[in-house]
Amino acid sequence: MRVLGIETSCDETSAAVVCEGKRVLSNVTASSLSFHRRYGGVIPEIAFRMQLDSIAGVCDCALSEAGMELGDIGLIAVTNGPGLSGSLNVGVNFAKSAAISAAIPLTAVNHLHGHIYANFLCHSGIRFPCVALIVSGGHTAVYYVRDCGDMEELGSTADDACGEAYDKVAKILGLGYPGGPVIESRAAESSGKRGIKFNCSAPGSKYGFSFSGIKTAVLYYVSGQLRKGPLPPDMINDIAYAFQEAVAGVLVEKTISAARDRKTAQILVGGGVAANSRLRREFETRAAKPGMKVFFPEKRFCLDNGAMIAGLGYRLYRKGSVSGAGLELQLD
Ligand code: KG4
Ligand code: ZN
Image 1: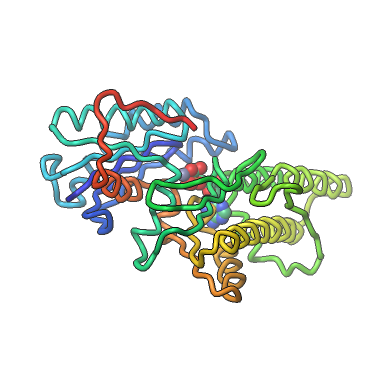
Image 2: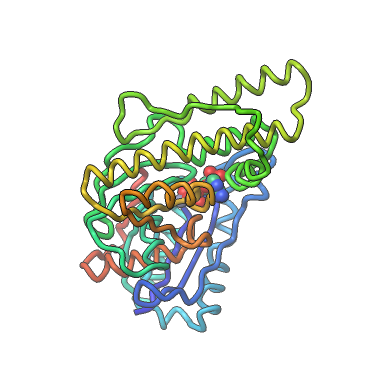
């Protein structure tokens, strides 16, 4: 079965055609990122207006790259939350109209479950139950996963999401938006020899996280340095390095400890921050000793994309999940 997947939960408009939940025939994404950059974060009003303009073209493009027309599609899968309500409405209403007008079944997919499913697009041999870590711009949480779409939250962030912390720290350092990729590349330039250290613990929470404290610590450190003069570029690199080390350390430690407690040797990581090479390396190093296997999606499937929604939609539909014109948003 060929599935058209539509994802519009944040600033991207993405559509993909995926065959049997696995083979990606196309995956097309239009981003309004350049319009948000000057504001240092996503402006919901701009995002959904751009999505209204681009949704039809992006879906057409995904179909034509896959060599298909709407009539060749057996199922439409769409993200119905969590995310920005205006943005989600664009995707959901477009999907409803396409499904009803072409008499194609429709299924709703949870955005976060989609990020975890992205691993199934890229790997074989994943077994349930396992533990998953979602690290995105809006969410950071550890889950016990019994099956596709059947996830129990074990712990989450008490304040900012991890990607949000990357974005805020990049702003403090004057590195622009989005923060993840630029912090990663600036940290890679650091020798770490200044020995700057930040703490990213969440005391009292076994699998929970907190990122607002480390953001404030970076802010105080930078303000203190700015009183002496402009930050030299190599100091910016060292701050980015210290921030990233602390964040990667806590994400890996808590996820591995959840996997150990739940007696599973498999971990799935998903979401925008899963694209981070330092996080991947830290997981691989620390999971080796307890003999755990950590899966990451290919980098192109870490950020919001239609392929993960089409893939998971197919699995859910096979289990009987069908929606109709009454499909509603699930904002959290
Ligand atoms: O999952 P995603 O595309 O959107 C949401 O669902 O939120 O994640 C976007 C987030 C942004 O905060 C961005 O800074 C972060 O993912 N990100 C990264 C990297 N690439 C994107 N964070 C760390 N390292 C990266 N390489
Ligand atoms: Zn996402």
